[in-house]
Amino acid sequence: MDIIIRDNYAEMSRYAAGIIAGYVKNKPNCVLGLATGSTPIGTYKELIRMHKEGLDFSRVVTFNLDEYLGLGIDLDKPYDLDQSYARFMYEELFSHINIKKENIHVPDGRTKDPEKYCQWYEEEIKKAGGIDLQLLGIGGDGHWAFNEPGSSLASRTRIQALTKQTLDDNYESFYKKAGVDRDKMPHFAITMGVGTILEARNIIMIANGVKKADVVAKSIEGPVTSQITASAIQLHGGGITVVLDKDAASKLKNLDHYVHIERLKCQYGLS
Image 1: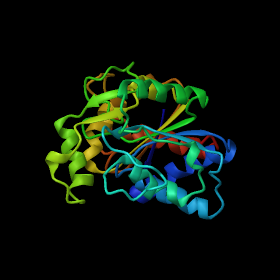
Image 2: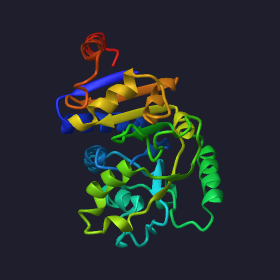
Image 3: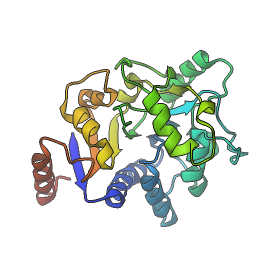
């Protein structure tokens, strides 16, 4: 596991985007797993900038982690007045790059048969050859996607009830700004499972801000537990990169060691 620490959010986002861009350049038809939330916005802005400078997304396939049950948009009609993650992705990334509509996969919260749809989503990931690189954030209580505390670390794509903390966090990030009453927020979501996420060949997890420092330390250095689903990152056997700003890294017990290792790798051309 590579722990990369940068001075601030902008530098963290630039580094993360550079990793993703590297996969796109080396494998133009790569499969990317994408995340929503405030943390990856800077990374997406950097990818948009790189696209304007020539980064080609025309053969890239994407799968998003999650969506609120009951919400969703058609990419042909992207400006529906909802707070869907599909709308977020369109406005923050997809409408600014040359990705093909048919290569975009965001769970459809409007499905009439959620259980069958979740099985279909799993099958689509397999048909695409699996995810080459999965981008992840981390929730305030340590969750990945909508895998709330207590979720099985072997879980698959499914319907998940949202905790009060997740509802509070998402209200502040999305619904409050849109003037939507908290009571009108969806209380369920479709989410990739922890087991699904762990099948990605490579993972990049990003986090910023002092509010994430405790849970970042627990996920990387604490015990593996279903109460902090992001701690499952310790179980992944492939390439893992965790990119943090200084605030999010501030409570890591082995902080000096991580900085030392990165310096060594740079010195010997191993990064």
